Image (tube, rainbow, N blue to C red):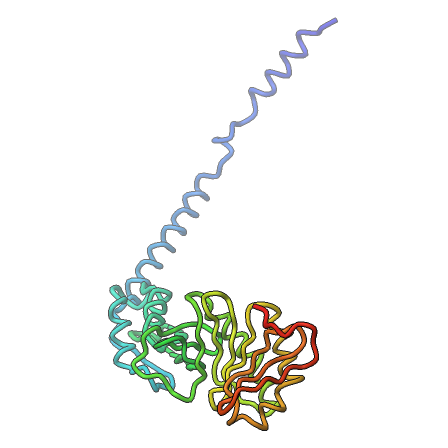
Length: 265
């Protein structure tokens, strides 16, 4: 059994409640909006006051290959607006495109200056004909005007800089302990490795088991090479168990006991 009069009472009670718009405190909302607008205006005025033209570039760093005027010129190429609106990342990227610049830090110095701290690249090795690698194995100059002759010579196909540099880093300390100085590492197009020692002695490691062959060279052949460095042309480690030696004055073979005296790849 339904009671219609109960529904009518409920409807009448609902109709007596104030609506959403009636419950809003319009005066408080207006005050809040005015405060927000005022803050925006103040921020804009402050930005306009602080956004002065960049008049000075303060360059810091230990410079051997890069000059401060070169840094200032790069900054001026990028800075178009005022100090507050300048894009610091864009300025940094432009500076780091300069040859011999490794890293740059760019900061604002109020009221009208940019502070630039530059770290130069440190050449750790020569790469192919005219390139230079840093200590991270990164090619940072492809056509250097001057190649320090005391740096090791690393060679390899395009894109193998890091791989060749890693083998050099892995080998140089171990060879030095064995009385040998590593002066170069080569990786040819077929994937074959060679090490070059002082006096031009070449150690042929081939394409397979390169790490094992390097270990075997240090264990079995390094003492012989260290004693007779001036007489040796190359050492071929591309054998199953031993090695062969190419002499300068005469041909001779020194191979550790093994079943197969034919070099592998």
